[in-house]
Image (cartoon, rainbow, N blue to C red):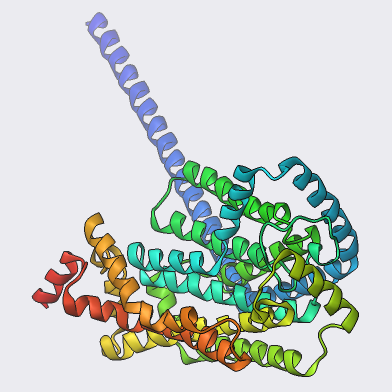
Length: 459
């Protein structure tokens, strides 16, 4: 009996110990759970506070962001203009030395000269028109419209600054400079450099955005784009067309045009959001007012302010006659810069073409227009053979609009060249591309996406 009692006591003690251990463990688990809940609540509070801070900063940025960005843009432009005016002569002299060294090394090498001439052609107006047509044919309407607007701004800005600065090209007063590209207008800034930076950076951004390139590929693609731009600007030195200060100033203006669209206006190639902003009459009024003001100021400078004194015009004209004989007067000095201002009509024509397409062809339905230009229902998303046929048809549709530029003589009157050869054709081509071309292709069923056609039939 005594043994049984002792065993029972031991069993009771063990049970009591186990119960106490279990209770202790439960208490510790509860404490841990409470600590975890407290930590979670603290983290939630911290995340809530951080999110509120982020939203407050975003709100704070959104309140002054555009005004701040536009102020910084104008400040950078003003500082750049001052630096250019202070360092113009130094960089011009340095550029003359660089041209001498390059042309000595080229030594009339046909392959090297041809290579630089091909690079220079990549920034010519006909090549840029073909790039805009390719984007319209293969990518989407919005991307080509954006590139056209930037190209128009680059051309107008080039003419405007050349009318103001009236600086000579290197071979105008350096007789030893060999001319491999007969450019006879003013030299500052370099129009090829402006176009190379603003246009090809935009093309690079469109390709990266639309074709969903991987980050690693994007990195190398950016390097290739920058190297290609530097080659184009370097070709202008090698061909004797520009000095170093003119090329650097052109790079600066091109970068400012690019920054205006992608840093100030924050364009992200997001069609569904940005098309509604673009179609606002206020935006069109702002752009058209700026362009028309530049055009108006350029016309006043051209008609009422003397361009050159007699000594400069005689010496520069003699150099042009020796290096580039039979050059039409419309490509000389202030005339070339004045006619470049007509490029502003491309912007107005393209914008009105899009407005006409949405307003009348789409009956004012912007969502339907977006559906035709986005994703699987993009109207130009077809196979390779259909796209090749389509681009020839697009060229045929737009040839009548551009034909005055080809048939009006470069030695005609000033008004005929300005209006018939430049202003009206560029307006008509862009209005036709964005206003009528897709409608005609739809009507004759040429190179249209079948998925979109099926969707139209279902509706």
